Length: 225
Image (cartoon, rainbow, N blue to C red):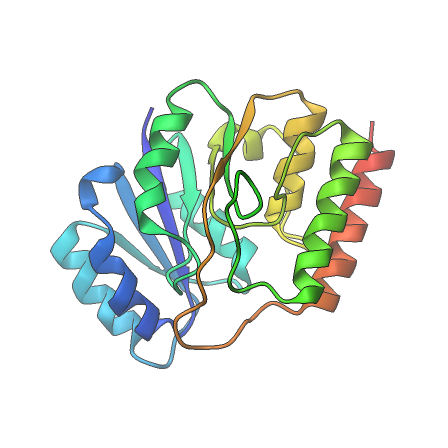
């Protein structure tokens, strides 16, 4: 089983400078950066980093975070994908923990912000309530046992996406993965992991737009056989 770390970036220079030195190259088989046309020097920084650390750097052709995953998967050799945020929200030291857990035979492992005492320092009341509501809906409607269905930081087998109804729709790939794993009764685990405050920049996700997208995903999957 080979592991691919996917790191999407859009103007993440401060975060990349702080976080990337904490990632040990031997933790995964390959690292793929997908840059969404950064204008703050992120791309140039990643060019030097990728060359020095034997990584792949892709200049994103499409738009949006979800599309960056698909572009990375097209170039990836790994059986397992690990999306990672370089803005400080994801803890680098959880990467080898994810790898070890996946090797136990799981189809997806989520670094949950609400599992076993973990916490988010980046949540606000709106995003915290939204995650609780959508996680509860997915658990009730699809038989899941999740504590965090929206967090980006997780590991999942490539086959979960390739064999499921995973699309680049508004609302994110994360609730789709949670629903597909629950419907197909795949083996999933949560592990606790804090979400620190982001380093520089602003939140790119619109809670209202994203929330409406997730409602659409849940409704589509509920009525799909």
